[in-house]
Structure formats: structure tokens, C-alpha cells
Image (cartoon, rainbow, N blue to C red; front, side, top):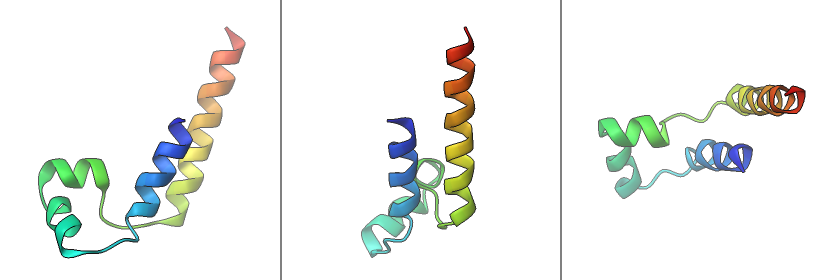
Length: 59
């Protein structure tokens, strides 16, 4: 679920309409929604979730 949520937020950054871009200009909107889609973020999210799963499995 964490990976799907992270992907959804990242992919939503490809959507640009005035109402959501206005939200993204606020501090909270920028921190939660981000502003720029970057492919490498998807890789980072995947690696991070994988590390979390492996760490949880080792306990």
C-alpha cells in the first residue's frame, strides 16, 4: 500500500490544472503533493519499500 500511495502521488504530479497547482504552491501542498514528476523517485520509493519489507522480515 505504501508503494501504491507513493506512486500515485508521484504520478499525480503529471496532472496540471490551476486548482491543484494552486494547492501545490502552498507549503502543505508542496510537502504532500510535490511539484515535479521525476522517474528516479519511483525507483527510490521501490527501493525504500523493499528495504522496509526485508527489515521487517528479518525480525
